[in-house]
Length: 83
Image 1 (tube, one colour):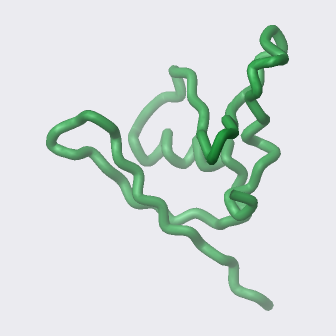
Image 2: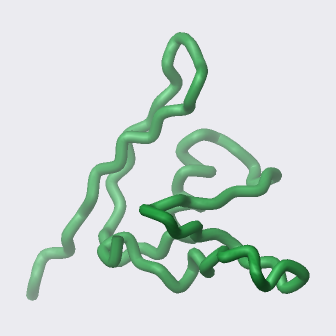
């Protein structure tokens, strides 16, 4: 049996004083959508805002079929380990 690889994420809200932050451990096999859900729970939020992650020149979130040329890749299809 092999051990699962875990990433420790330090999440900090921008432009807030004093700093509001959380530290969470997630498996590197987690999708970016799952990481979004983990952040929602860690911050006590209720998933009522638009969101996306940026890595390099790519954006990952929930693609809108009305905007197929937005360049948004599906966060549910990308694993943390791939980034």
